[in-house]
Length: 200
Image (cartoon, rainbow, N blue to C red; front, side):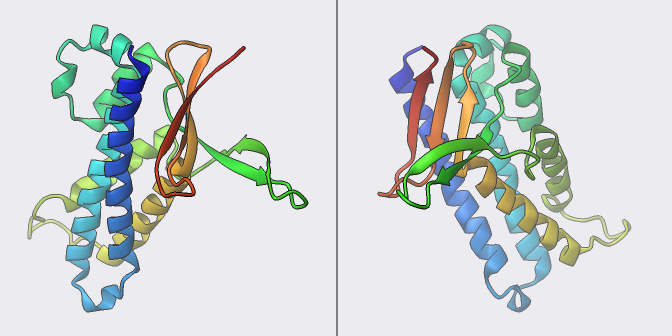
């Protein structure tokens, strides 16, 4: 795998995620009382679904060599849940691990980096979110029980906040057991940084 080329593709996915997450966050934090809740819920659900699909597609990038052996038609894959299931077959530890920097109060420098446990968008919660937004991506059948858009908005806020926690600073395990990519979504200059780390 050409690391530089694949890292560039990975960053492309992350840039798209970043734009869509910020847009969804704005929709949810504006004065939504002035907007029909159905439109807010539908628009945020659409962005969240694409964000989740992009997380899955970025997993293909990081595992392309092995994934392409399993899925010859990988270039046409789009279903987020299915992609995660298949990526897991070639790399059980592929899912992003959110990290937190611990700053030394005296030096103001990073002392250590710890993994954030029990976050909102674990691999299991990813599936929950992916399924949840399905109700808001299509016209609602008038004969079905009405959807509760106020509750949907609360849940969508939780999921979008979860995206920020998951992807603000994270690492992913590459198929090679000694290699990881460490990612910072917002460096000091506002850029996305991906660095390959290797155990010595």
